[in-house]
Length: 340
Image (cartoon, rainbow, N blue to C red; front, side, top):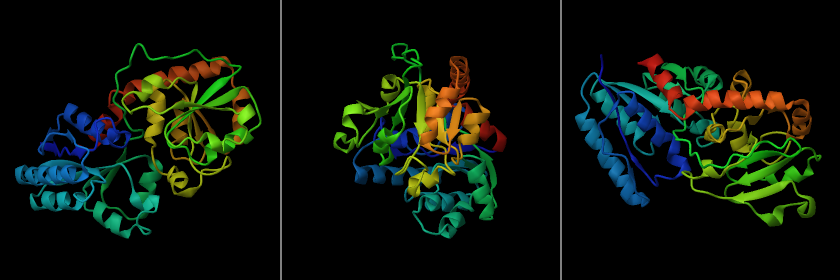
């Protein structure tokens, strides 16, 4: 059996949401018997020093890499992914790449040929979902591919976290993240038995269009290691862009292919999901019974009115089932088992 290894790296902060998924993946790899052959995971904010440590760690890892190993790389890996591929092939080792972001799909390259050529040097890929897998197959990728389905989010429940029972006369819909233009359009929705609780950065009260009768309640911004304990709501909203009627722009369109880490965060906050019907994760949400999809945010009033308290309670029970796997790293663990 081949030796299973990975290369830990430096992250800007142990509590930075941007690095949470990759740090969790390193932990899950270790828990599944994979060995780190680089330096220990570090959390140095200085970009120059952090890059230097990562460079030295990768070089040290490639020197230690034994022929015939299987090395798991996380992509993107700044400037080092190509270097790692070169070193792995030099040592006659198999490469399994765990894909976090596809820059071509985010408009970073303009054309996918450069990125596909690089990823095609992997022997195996773990991608987000069936939609992303189909896109890779359209690019004639040769690697063996499997899906992670949903990103894990390692966390231990805090028994003191606030979880208020649902008030069906005023259902709290949570949006967590950067405040996109659509957030301020929410006040244009027809009033119903719901409001929006906002968590994150970029909120500007001056942009609220209906300040005297707003449905928006800004709750603040919290570090990534604390936000789960602060979010208290009934549904989590997965939506990006400028309008209420569709997810537009680069980030909105990327929803057609990616698994937002935000969705996993909501599950750990015990909340069912409301998601754009063209998002890649919309099928997962409905198949697992953990929420519902909408083509426009204008549909929320009708959809919530159609749900009985018993149906919402069932969604919350289903959330607990999926949450158990998400917070213990089972989705990546199963993907690794399918490939190795």
